[in-house]
Image: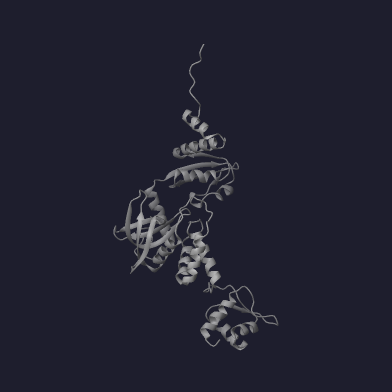
Length: 353
């Protein structure tokens, strides 16, 4: 192989497999002399690739971990596997799968050949993921379009459906994608409204990049500049959500250690504090729906008592009554009659003498 750049890429691809390569085997694979292999190894080291050499009759070369992440060379099967995995995770806003995974997916799909992109789509459409069910499913292509436009500072157009069903056309300067663990949101500057907005990505339709570039504006968050990052975007989203839905103060006692409870609650609900008697107490504010908070408390799987707010207490009472009826294994007709009569049963008249 006389083409030096092509030979270096082939050599790098071989070294990225988890094994040690004897110099003679590499020379045979690339159809060059062992001396050429040694020179090529030195070239890779000069480019920043940490290639380690071991001496002896069974010695050879292997790529080791360095100070920075080197570019990876993937074969077709590896590229398809990674793209499918990133799509499956990004499309459901799973906790811990954040903006970085979407950026990685956008970069990968940008360079995937058409034949591999088709294979990824076929695999995606032929599988059904088992998810938690409390978040909205999103087309990964929507996420990658938004992420690519935000990274490239390119204006976006898309159709948007608001919470009340109103449909509008939007043109925005995308800033960041933010995952709350339940949903994805786009933080962007709305050009027609001349103001910053947050958009639920599962309500975004037909997004496309216009090709028009823009200079980033400073995000209206204290201390944020034009080069602010994801943390400031998350703060802006949290502030916007508080304005849209008033916060309620929750006060819950759990009959389990604080470590047990904290491991089973979303981090954004806060950390419970030990009560000194084997239990713990959580005092925090939230802007989530009553239904979601009630279910998350129940999923902690221990005894708990809600001291407030009253709205949450009343919802739990109704939920508890429904769950109790569901566990009785009664025919539907009996349950309907019981609901009509109320929890205390039919009204009793005065005793007849």
